[in-house]
Image (cartoon, rainbow, N blue to C red; front, top):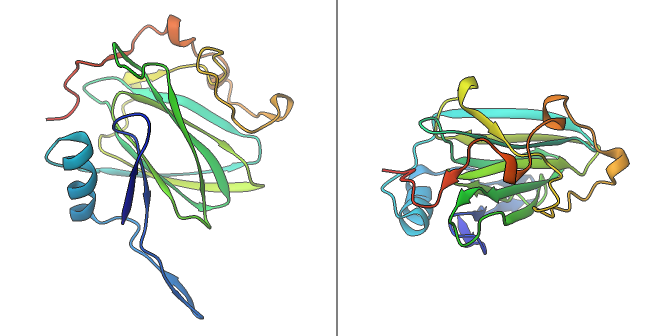
Length: 197
């Protein structure tokens, strides 16, 4: 397991140790002990991140999903990977008073690079589908709660995210068309919030 810290503290890119031969390959997609040693303790400075729910979504080229988050006490960390196709995965810092507030990390995740993106609590998450079809899987450290849903509009000019999809080809749900701008969001996290024990 290789962990690369990004320009935004807490967001990390994780690559597996891949073992391949003429039969194919093998790798550990998740190891709780290594994850907590290398991410929870070293990057988040918390004892452990305990994932409780696994999700999967399938989308076609041009789909943009996001930018989503859950408010406390249901805030979520996510560990995202792609098992088919390729996506641009995006984490946006929505913690007011953070030195990186409003900035984002964007990483191409694909079935061939096997990379994962760790998105801590206090961030909004979204992705765009760059291949004909993509299957994305992600772990969450808190359960889904409809009443705690929050979101930022995907194309907020202040965020300046290049989704790598021509605007006329972007496919959105009706819900994702109508989220507020970052400056108009009714709820955002604060940098001083204690989001981990």
